[in-house]
Length: 141
View 1 (cartoon, rainbow, N blue to C red):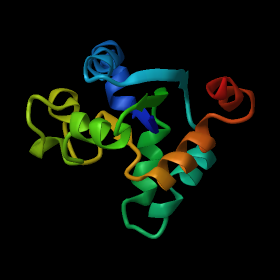
View 2: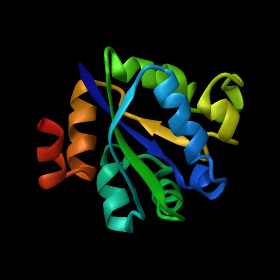
View 3: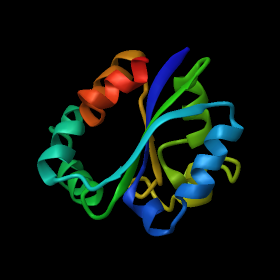
View 4: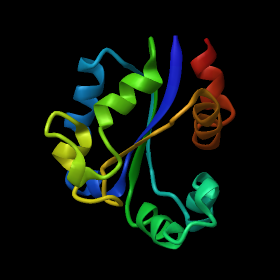
């Protein structure tokens, strides 16, 4: 079993799309083993996306990710990272097909509805960043 992080971003939570997104996740054969709604501070968003800190879009990304609540999830299943990435679709929602979450709920490169880890080491970092302490202990039981 593999685990990955999934986020429902502020643009999708504003549209109340979290229900259909979570349904699509379970229909794709992934299990949601942890889930919480939260609002990131600027410092949290900057830390989470630190890998992009030198990129020109970093400030806009932090501003966007703090613009409203997100839903953070730990997803589990066989080949969970790739399954989640396939379900999300391309990063640019304007290039995503209607069968993908970004194609259904996203509107642009930035407002693309969902986020997912791209590799096992990224998943470990991202899950640990948003689900700490007792929350991770519960996942191990």
